[in-house]
Length: 135
Image (cartoon, rainbow, N blue to C red):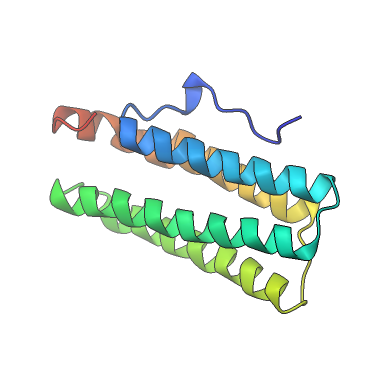
């Protein structure tokens, strides 16, 4: 069973962002499944690295459009992105250096953060981007 299931409730009504969010949800689910199945450190490390890399790609893309369209809450939004990136990069670094394991606590943090960020923070830009012709 997936840790997180994508549904229409998550849609921010911007296709590129929704597709990228789906990818992030899938990566979190892949990490969860690999952990549950007792996959080795190499496999878990690869998934964590992909999650961190894709998160950075998504945030960069989202922020580029925010700047391009002069989204008024850009700086506040970027701070959330930067804090999350720092946290997951820390997980990745600690895991790769044997200082931490991927625990249920880490997975719950990832799940809760992504759900809250998409359903609350990201939803705040839906109308803004749609009115700017981005959908």
